[in-house]
Image (cartoon, rainbow, N blue to C red):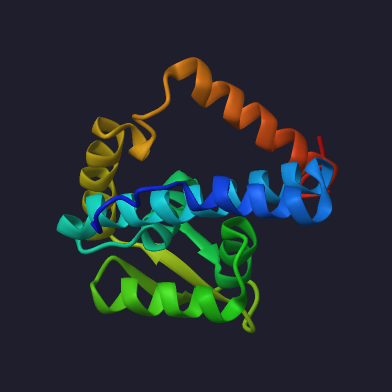
Length: 168
């Protein structure tokens, strides 16, 4: 990890934004920039935690989704929809998991056009080990206490609901 900066660049940007456009537009700019930077930090920390399992967070999420299903499999399109990623990203995620023997592609039983991603026993084991590691590390949110984590989830849920991310 790089050495910490001497000054908060988001606070500095907020100051410049306020000087140029006023405090009203500076507030949401600072909030958005803070969310984006927090996402970068979390993804880097989660990927570092999962490196020992030879996983990235997106690959872990795919394994977790597959492990939660009754059959251990999902059509690739449904997997992408639930991961909220583009088809190309799903293909890349499944390619890597398949190369590592953690999933396999199988034909859909009732739809010849569809292919399923199916978690393997090795994939279930890897997912379990990775989950223990992430749980022990509090999913990299250890800087926030439980009440703050709940508040953050609630705030972001409201924004997601307002944007039509899901039906409330």
